[in-house]
View 1 (cartoon, rainbow, N blue to C red):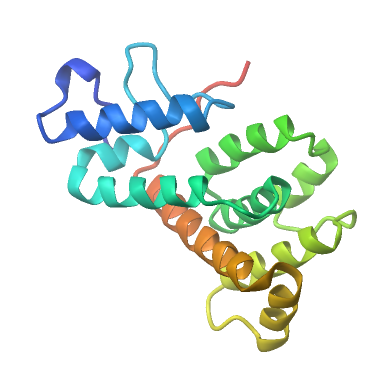
View 2 (cartoon, rainbow, N blue to C red; view 1 turned 45 degrees about the vertical axis):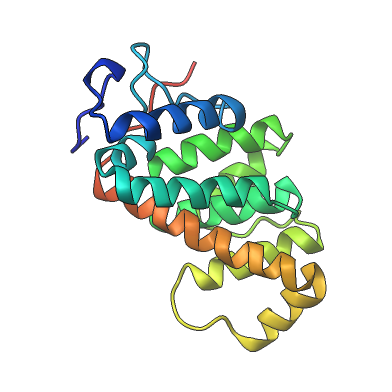
Length: 188
């Protein structure tokens, strides 16, 4: 870990409002995995965001907007997120979203295949299109036109917008995690 975790007692006046907002959001939306140390310090991508509160607040607001305005099925979202995590080999992202996907009932075989950066054979149509879109975008370049049209037909304009933004958000999360070498907590 390249940035020390910040205990609540050590927060600056600029960090405190962001910490409070993130802690509230983590408790409400991100509780399938360990994200808070026993002393209250935030782990995962939240700690680096807290170190730069002006930038961290903007990223946190995007994260909240993507969560609050989600219309895609969670299984579709988790597949896209895990594809990005696997592409970036972002250990904490993979750890956290495996926990979320397990809660949603995603089978272990599918999870193992996804994090191996391979397309599972048991995906339904929406899941398959989400996988292909996330896979293509996370490798760089323009999304191929046939795939864009297929995703548009599958999810509608709002849905494809959401999926593209989700891939971008988790590319940012993955880059943050990898850049600061954020560790994965021990699993129970």
